[in-house]
Amino acid sequence: MVVLGIETSCDETSVAILKDKEILSNIILSQVEVHKKFGGVVPEVAARHHLSNLPLIYKEALKKAKIEPEEIDAVAVTYGPGLIGALLVGLSFSKGLSLRYGIPLIGVNHIIGHVYANYIAYPDLKPPFIVLMVSGGHTEILKVKDGKIEVLGKTMDDAAGEAFDKVARILGLGYPGGPEIEKVSKNGDPYKFNFPRPMLDSNNYNFSFSGLKTSVLYTIKNLETNIPVPDIAASFQEAVVDVLLKKTFKAARNNGINRIVLAGGVAANSRLREKAKILANQYNYEILIPPLELCTDNAAMIAMAGYHKVLEGKYDSLELEAIPNLKINS
Ligand code: ATP
Ligand code: MG
Ligand code: FE
Image (cartoon, rainbow, N blue to C red; front, side):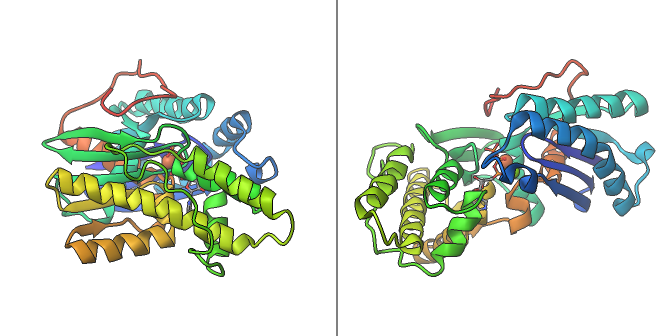
C-alpha cells in the first residue's frame, strides 16, 4: 500500500511517500530563513510559500520514491492544528489529487502525526506507552492504550518550544530559539542559576512555562551588564528539561506503563534526550526517541499516521475542513 503524506501546518512544506511501512521519500522544505528576519512565523507569508513550493516538493517526492501518481492508494494530509492559511494550502492540494486520481483522502491531526514519528523509527512499537509531546505550540503528556489516546496533562500557558523561542529572544539569540539555546548552553553551567521548576510538585500532569520565562527576564534585568548568556541559557534549559521529564516519568509510574516515547520539535533537544535516557536507565523504563529529522515537522509522520487510519478504514470526504485548533480525540 502506498500512502502520500502532505504537511503544511506551519512553516515546513513537506511531502512523503510511504510504501507499506517503509518511507521511500520525505522531502522537507523549511521556511525558517524566510521568517528569521521577522523573528517568528508570519502566517500570510507561510501560506504563500506553501502555495508556490508544494507542487515542486510533491514532484520531487514522487521522483525520489520512483512512484507514479496512479500507484498512490491514499493521501494523508494535516488538517489541524496549525495556521489556517497554511493548512488550507495542503488540504486543497490533497483534495485536488483525490479528485484527479480518485484516491481516498485521510485527514491527520498534526500532533498525532508527531506521535507516529515513533512508529517510523520503531516499526515494532506497540501500545501501551506514555508520550511526552513537546513542540512549538503544544506540551502534553499522552497515554496511548487500547486504541485510544488520552491527554493526561498539558501546559496552562506557553508550550515548551514557545518558551525556548521567547527566552532566546530575551537573550538576543537567533530564531528558532530551541536550537540556539541548545548550542550556547554547551558552554554554560546548568546549575549557575536556580530557575523555578513551575508546577513540579503539583498533583497533576500539567505544566506552566510563562513564569520561568519571566524569571529569566528579571534575572537579566537585575544583572544589568555582563550577562552570562551561556549560563542563563543552560540553566533555563535544565529547568525545562527537569520539569518535563519528572512529570512524564511520574505519569508513567502512576499509570503502570514502563514505555515512554518522546515526540515533537523540542524532542530534538540533546539535553532532553540525554537526561531521558539517564532517567530511563536509572528507573528501568524503556525510552524511545525518534531521530532528529522525524522530531520536527515532516510529512513522513503524517503518512504513517494516515497508514494506520487506512488499516482502520477511517477515510474522510472531500468536505473535510481545516481546523486550526483541532484537539486530540475530536
Ligand atoms: P506544533 O507541532 O505544536 O503545531 P510546530 O509544528 O511549530 O508546533 P515543531 O516543528 O514540532 O513545532 O517544533 C518546533 C519547535 O521546536 C520550536 O519551538 C523550536 O524552537 C523547538 N526546537 C527545535 N529544535 C530544538 C532543540 N534542539 N532544542 C529545543 N527546542 C527545539
Ligand atoms: Mg517549524
Ligand atoms: Fe509540529
